[in-house]
Amino acid sequence: LAQTIEYDGNPAVHLILDDVTEQKSMADKAKLNELKLYHQDRLTSLGVMAAGIAHELNQPLNTIRVITDGFLFGREQGWDLDLDELFESLEMVSRQVIRMTEVIQNVRDFSREDRDRPLHDVVANHAFNNVFLMIGRQLEAHGIEVHKDFAVGLPPVRADLHRLEQVIMNLLVNARQALDRCSRERKKIRVSTSVKDGLIRIEVSDNATGIPDDIREKIFQPFFTTKEAGMGTGLGLSICQSIVNEFCGHFEVRNNEMGGATFAVVAPVGRLA
Ligand code: ADP
Image (cartoon, rainbow, N blue to C red; front, top):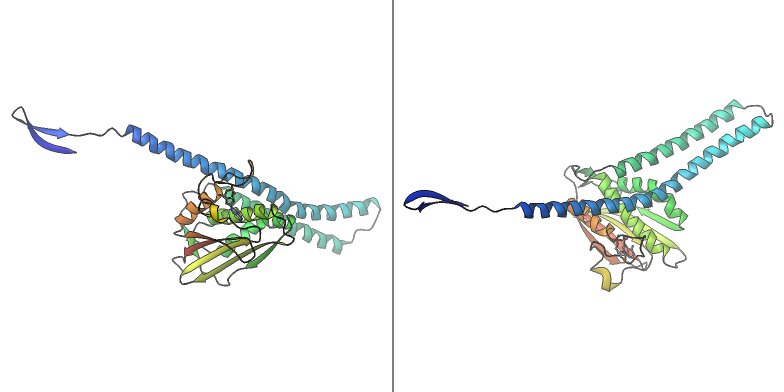
């Protein structure tokens, strides 16, 4: 703030200066803390993903092993090599390798630092498919039936594909953990995408126990968790919410008719739609 005044009969300038060093260092610290939390949660979801990847890679590796062992066993037994059979088997091996490459590519994309990436038009169905490539088999291994109901020709949302995948991954892992802890005979996760009145709706539902009324308000708060130590940081949903807000969207949560929880991400249809 500056103003001209008179001092001792002479014209002078009166300046008021604010020392903002402390404020700035506090803002820097807050930013640093936020980043640390972000990385911490990222590591947790990477850990969950590592377990998923092990499942995903196991099956193609087993298939390759069975095929190659079969030929090696044949050689030991002195069998004639049937070239047609060999090429058919090589094709199968090649398909398995492509599948593994896809899984690895997805993991690479997912773990890339992408916080400041610009937004694009993203079709939610693709995000779901990529996430299921990473943890689909893991859900199966946990005895969970997955029902998919994706809208055909779904318009895009203005988002970042990998951040949207992170949100979906988080919701699916939460649903899986809730199902792991409940004693339902048929454990189900239902996912769906739809569009209505210019809004895209992305839903993940489970038939676990739902969310008790007294904690419904708290679940998006950072560090709020009902899970035992090591199972949850309580940061998942708060980070999901900030990501969804970046896409100009919001969350809706309800207990559903299956007795479990439904998390819906609602966001406006993208620009090019
Ligand atoms: P965390 O998973 O680390 O606990 P989140 O922020 O992802 O952190 O979730 C916060 C809390 O919300 C969970 O501890 C749990 O109580 C509740 N919650 C989230 N998803 C579900 C779900 N599908 N069913 C029941 N409760 C859930």
